[in-house]
Image (cartoon, rainbow, N blue to C red):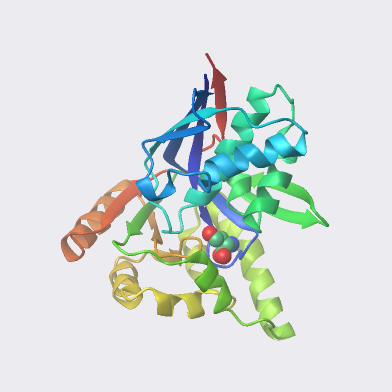
Length: 292
Ligand code: HSE
């Protein structure tokens, strides 16, 4: 049996659209073993228990890439990560399926090769990179070759995820974005993206406040999250920084200190009792695969 664990990820960090992504300590766990049927999927939403399942599709895509037949599979799913909430659940499926197939066939692909295939399936690399490598990653694709560098995140910073009880479709959240931006906006954005990595590494909340102003995607996507302004108000009053996690609907607050994080969590849980408001930590670990 192959067992895989993959971390949730928060892509973009606001100003790093399609480039930055941070691994979190929420995990999806999958197992893969031989079945007497073509495919059994256990533990996933019944809507996803079929051959279109992304974990299975990723496994099959890997098998095809190395010219191997897809075996009869029983896949079990045990995930802490809600789907369509901007926490990289689809990247966990893609990375989980590919990494499991790599072990199943003893193919020996390294993490960059896995990322190349995962980024192709996902359409962008910023969730898949931290899901594979862990930590805060900046990733570019040189043609289709991924180039990844990891950055530290200061332990002084605390992360609070506001996970609403409604989804946002990534496809819709990409479609509403404009197709061009001005040189002035591009320069504005580049500076903030570079300094965001420094602010996170140094735990510099003042710098975070100065750089967390995105012009590429957040202003458009905020309109897809009905409670965005109310959450912003709460988080700003707590002297914390608010980002949209990936394409939403989850909102990510960056807070200084554990006490402030707990206070923000308590206030938000009271205001939105149906939401999951959770303090999370960056995960230094990416995908893990074991065989038994
Ligand atoms: N960078 C991607 C986007 C992440 O913002 O559309 C999607 O989760």
